[in-house]
Image 1 (cartoon, rainbow, N blue to C red):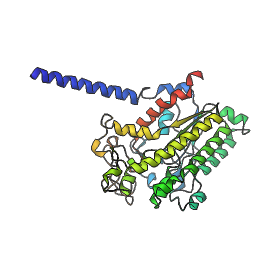
Image 2: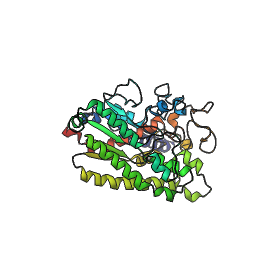
Image 3: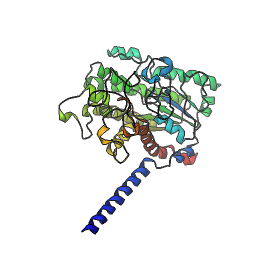
Image 4: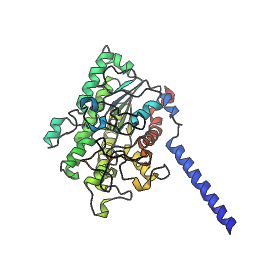
Length: 380
């Protein structure tokens, strides 16, 4: 009897260990640096977007933003860099996997842009501010939209290309462009300013059209590899779980995420994928990959325990205070005396709006695994 119990315990232990090993191989299929991405011989990365990718533009526009203060950046940099996390972002992991330096923000004076430029600004919208105003939506964080980021790119390329078409085509031949994630703030601002999910869905075609227009513009400059990310499952974030908390249990899914808001993200992503499919037909010589941020994050929730996250804190922010989700919009991370957890690696959410470095790392490796075959790097 005892022998049988011991045998069963040992068997369960090795089964669990094997499952964990296989899971880790799935998460990090290319080793710590995703060596296979180096086969693409990328020489630069150009990033557009918002706070999911900003490496320091907003804090130069507005040095008083909470993102300019510790504990932002504490895990990797031991100082704030403008990244809306405790450390690295997904674009950083792509750069490391490609063997490139981290991409500097466009507004950083005297920075090196030899290996690309980050135009993303935390709080940015896809739609210009005047278009948002037509929908009675304001942008409280920054005046920068995707249009302005494209103008920055134009100004930068004029400094490195002797002419728009031929010279830029050669210089951008081995560049990777991230067109976003962008558009999430258009919906965030509208929802928190009182619009319904149905009303916000009406904004989606215009947002997707704007992203496609921006992608066409970078292709016209000579981009040959473009990743267009979709949106996160926004209904899983503490800011939404707090702001739209309800006693109606049917409003939540099995991960305790709000169904309606995840439905909005899925609606946007489906429209985006349809537009990408058409854009590929129009540009058969350009690799245009969809970045599945939605399912990458959901995968983390599905395997949270095996990945080392604390299942009692999956819906709680690491840096923040108050309520069921450790989030209070009036006492956000980066403000004085707002507490931070002792181990961010146990949390999926960093500040209730953005994710932890560990979450971004796992997602980036999954995205690389998904996108790499589409890049056809072996033919370079």
